[in-house]
Image 1 (tube, one colour):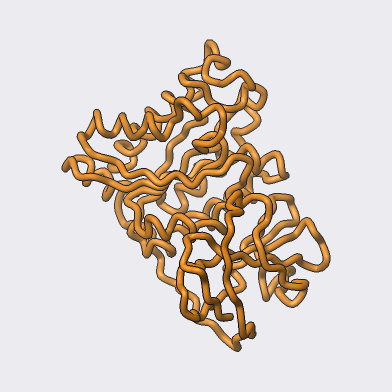
Image 2 (cartoon, rainbow, N blue to C red; image 1 turned 60 degrees about the vertical axis):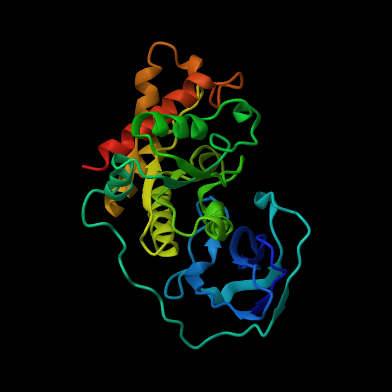
Length: 316
């Protein structure tokens, strides 16, 4: 299809419901920054499952999720976008293509997964970082309004390596991993090839029905999509799903999925779940805010330290 935008950094969005099942939705986000007509080509695999229930699977023309069962095309943003500022765009000439070439390059690094960003830090050079996440990372969540782990991380990098950090934080509370893949074009406009992308999700995913094997596949897909979007120039650090007071052990199912996915894709791993179990073994409540789910200052500091340590560890 063709799009003419309003020149803003807001995105356009499409959504389809599969087989009249409203629990199976597929979303696609696209730039409207251009003010001239621009052609956009969408693979079936570019339509991302928006939900985390057990039946919400990627489209597969040769399997049981045939694109032919997609319903009417909806234009606009669903609840998780948060970005509802005034914007406009025109769409025209929707059509199916007989074939579309799909990128097949494997961007997995041959060596240590975080060697490049660590080398820049060791040289004292500035780095750019994108922190994908939910309310544990979102600046706008009330638990992060005064202190938060990304800002502790920025300060720790400056102290440890003397490097300045330009940090883009697109995290949105209440969202899940797949939804943030749909929204990636928003931060790619600002940081098209960041030195490091951190990925931290799990709590909302689990509450919506996401479980271990499915989360492993979703995290592998996320790593691959980030690498394709940045042409392999960004190092990726997967932060395991984090525990809360009530789900202290439960979340290990998704944390293990993160470990498996990171190893399979040769991405960096920050095992925040294990770190919290170690530093909170005598008093886990002290790591959290009053709701016992989101991070208090000690938890934010522990998270920041875990990420800084992981960069060193994953550079070898």
